[in-house]
Image 1 (cartoon, rainbow, N blue to C red):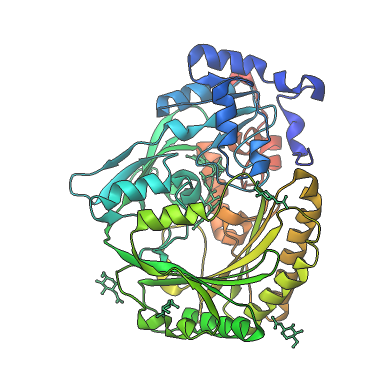
Image 2 (cartoon, rainbow, N blue to C red):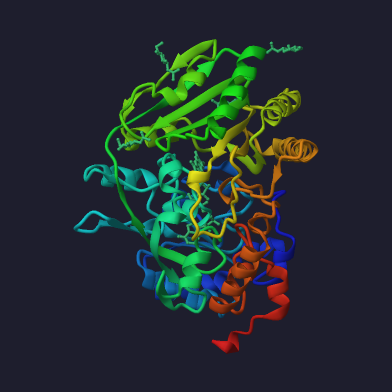
Amino acid sequence: MLRNFSVLGLLCVVTSGAARGSCANCCAKLASSLPGKVFSPDSAAYEASLASYWALQEQLITPSCIVSPTTAIDVSTALKIIVPDSCKFAVRGGGHGTAVGVANIEDGITIDLRGIDTIVLSEDKEQVAVGGAATLGDVYTYLAQYGVSIPGARAAGIGVGGSTLGGGFGYFAPSQGLAADSVAEYEVVLANGDIITANQQSNSDLWRALKGGGSNFGIVTKLTFNTFPLGEVWAGDVFFSVSNETVQSTATALYNFASNPDYDENASVFVLYAYQNAPVVLVEYTYTAPVVDAPVFDEFEAVPGQLLNTTAVTTIPTLSASSQAQSPSGFEQITFAMTFVNDEQMILEAYNIMIAASSKLTGVAGAAIGLTLRPIVPSMIRPDDVLGLEVPAQGLIQTIGSVQFNLTADYSLMNNVADQMLSDLEAAAKRLGVYNRYIDMNHAKTEQKVLEGYGSQNYELLKAVAGKYDPKGVFQNLMPGGFKLLWVEFYILAPFDSSDH
Ligand SMILES: Cc1cc2nc3c(=O)[nH]c(=O)nc-3n(C[C@H](O)[C@H](O)[C@H](O)COP(=O)(O)OP(=O)(O)OC[C@H]3O[C@@H](n4cnc5c(N)ncnc54)[C@H](O)[C@@H]3O)c2cc1C
Ligand SMILES: *[C@@H]1O[C@H](CO)[C@@H](O)[C@H](O)[C@H]1NC(C)=O
Ligand SMILES: *[C@@H]1O[C@H](CO)[C@@H](O)[C@H](O)[C@H]1NC(C)=O
Ligand SMILES: *[C@@H]1O[C@H](CO)[C@@H](O)[C@H](O)[C@H]1NC(C)=O
Ligand SMILES: *[C@@H]1O[C@H](CO)[C@@H](O)[C@H](O)[C@H]1NC(C)=O
């Protein structure tokens, strides 16, 4: 497979022929300490775990064994075996990540957290404690019965843990901030197996670092969110027939929407410019109250050429399920992210860059590419997270690239298509003077330097917190998947020595 982690071959490695057995010893120890919770290749539970990843490239990675903890103590037990033996591992939450090897590992141990999924609402309904791999669909559905919600990501199958560790932009960001901003407390299993809680009073540096810092500090087994009251919403998609006029008027409407000084915090919109056999223009609306066609959307609603309009009064569980249904699993998926200062010319350039890339799709089975443009407005920003977002009055436009196709054989071709779009977007933004350093971890491409994009102060904070809670750099060295602090440097500073434990 072309997805190979160069530096990682340092630990727990043998020659490729025997590769699947390279962590056999770790797997055997895990199986005896966690009976019934460790699955080897060819078992039904192992196959089912792999089949449940969203992206095909993650499904095709074959770990030496899969550990399936159901409690924080199980996770602790697993780390106390894996770490002293220097076995490589991956941590899987909702399995919706797209970066190479983000939540699965060839010849290593994959810790599949899906058994840690309880959802407990406090008596006053003001907080909900959610297991580290509960899905957003389950959380939204549970909370809707009580008239409350949390500001999480959109599609139902996404893991609360993974998406919240990366920030988490969703339906409610304009009024509630990001998912990470609503977390009052995390329960975390550290590299040495200690189970600790982090909140504003206790381990507050870790609490802050987890608000966007990803999987660099520990395995999160519980997240306690502050809830907010929520009833019905108005939402849906409008597809347009594509003409120059549609593209121009959606670009103008998006610019004006995101730069509106009287931004309506119940409203959110994103514009998708895509290509799947033909160009596609789509606007997705959400209004977090049951108000049909709120005036804030007037300019979008005046865009000519509506083909299909699914907007309706609905609920978040329904919306989240339909968002998932529109994004089926089992395809090869490459995503990337970049951000620019809201600018109409740049929005049009994004469309043109996407169209230019579409010329490369001929002959690629099931090929679809898209750029989703999502406003980041000042009301989304909260002081506690580590994303370092600074939003000018006209807003930022978060740009998510996606490249989907059927066959592994097309991976390197399509990887080039993604790289070309990303570098063209970055070059255009720099040329127009609207480049912004923020990169959304939840959609970043493998090689993108997400954490550096949080600004040097936040980056230094993240390194200090990692050094304090994980002095050996276990989450950089033994767990390569995801967006990491300088893990090679950590390795040099803190080599593994099993006699330490
Ligand atoms: C259809 C679709 C829609 C999406 N919509 C949105 C959206 O609206 N907003 C948004 O922000 N993102 C969105 N995303 C992106 C999504 O948030 C990321 O892919 C996220 O990383 C998924 O988390 P996961 O737990 O499902 O994935 P996984 O692939 O299981 O995990 C992702 C990363 O998080 C780590 N991780 C997961 N759980 C834990 C844990 N408990 N402790 C420590 N590390 C953990 C994993 O090791 C891995 O590095 C969407 C993705 C898809 C496929
Ligand atoms: C937009 O205009 C350009 C030239 O002005 C033309 O080449 C292109 O085909 C038009 N696109 C659409 C979708 O009409
Ligand atoms: C947003 O919706 C809530 C709930 O209906 C409502 O109380 C609030 O006034 C709305 N905000 C705006 C700006 O309209
Ligand atoms: C959806 O279609 C209806 C009926 O044509 C129209 O009144 C409404 O404005 C449309 N909504 C949007 C968001 O475009
Ligand atoms: C791509 O895969 C999908 C889902 O399996 C299938 O429906 C479609 O026909 C495939 N496309 C091509 C061109 O092979």
